[in-house]
Image 1: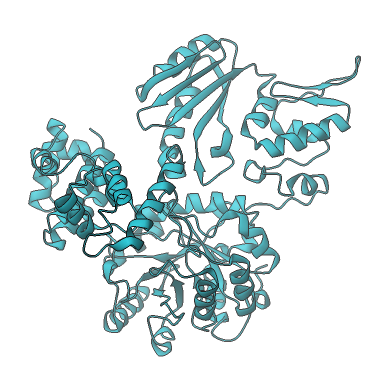
Image 2: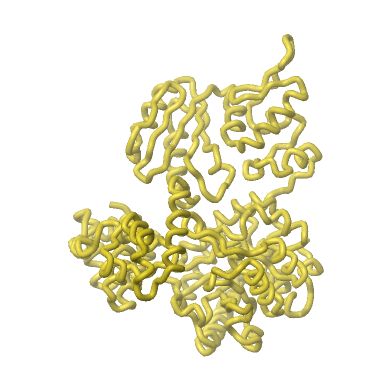
Length: 585
């Protein structure tokens, strides 16, 4: 039993109770319990098994008993009974865009739809379109969502594979026959989703390494096992490949297997122009009698080709070769550069930790400031705040700030951009806030021109500091809505609006492919975790990786500024000052 499994069980109970129409406070208690289990600093499994959860805030007697049963027996009778009331695949329906508990319940009761396969068949037969509350448009949207999921079925988000990468790397690095080990491929390049994981080791005895690799506890199936290459399928569904090379081959192999393919082609062409041949094992002369450059690490490979070292995140053949040749590569932002983060939620809306708990975690992470931005009232599904509740929160933040030294909470709000581009709160209320994140949370089907106009109208408001998750995508679940991103970037540049890089690994939005353009236009970035728990604050790790992939430096990211300077930046737009005028130094 692991904390992850326990949290999953609690979340599944919440979803199933939702299907039964149970009291929403009851379902929320299970979701809160799941977050507590995931974020608990000690050994929650051992504590639960010992029935030692008294005093853990947020876990009532009923939850404590269930966690004790789970941890000590490996299963929960209450959960098993609940699952038996529904088909096994019904929880997968929650992942389909546009389906919530009420519609899933109707599909099950009226059409016996209990799996994604059932859902697709019912949509194609026309049965779903005839259901009350659905219609032909809804059925067509469901089919689109299912097709999108199917097309990405073999992909995984970064947070789904990051823990696996760390476990496997630790095993390889501690292996007695391994001198060097690393992860390569799209994961190393910080692609937002990956198909598989590629590992590389330098060793004189590859056989024992391969033997131990295929026998890892998380392996579900051995796909191939050889002397220098093996492939396995993990229980999570991720394929992992391991290649073994000599220490002399390691540098070229790491360059090659990191990719991208386009970057490697450009390197090979450059090598040939210099009388060298570059492959996955070596950099060698093309003419007899030529001298092979010594390459112990990747920097040696690039140096032999007349290039500065190119960070893995930049290796997409989008200008990095020319920049490396001219000594013009950026010094990319690092997580240690961040001084604070914005766009974070608390129990006031749909977060699971209080204001004080979020502030304490931010200070534990060494941050100088934390921006709170609970939902506005239009996001009723997220318990959005009305004017009265928001003003009470502002007052509470001011009270807490009087108790801090060297740390500050910023009072903000994630204000909904309504269909016509107006905002969910009036100007006089937004004027009381330290900053405002404006986001689209509904009506995703507008034509591109209308959606673009909607967002531009919102960010033209002088009280809007930042634009939240620009395209609304949920990776591997929901595609972006139609929007003209370059036009939004131009409008942000003209108005001095910051665009966030939403670090939630489900979003990672604005997409890394647009940040070079934003940077050229002078638009600043804020790497925001969109945290709904103390654990969520740690998602800035993914945001920084994608910011690096977007060529961003610390001077491009406003939350790399210390407390004194960020206060000026947040006031800048309201006072009619452009961010470029403020500067970052």
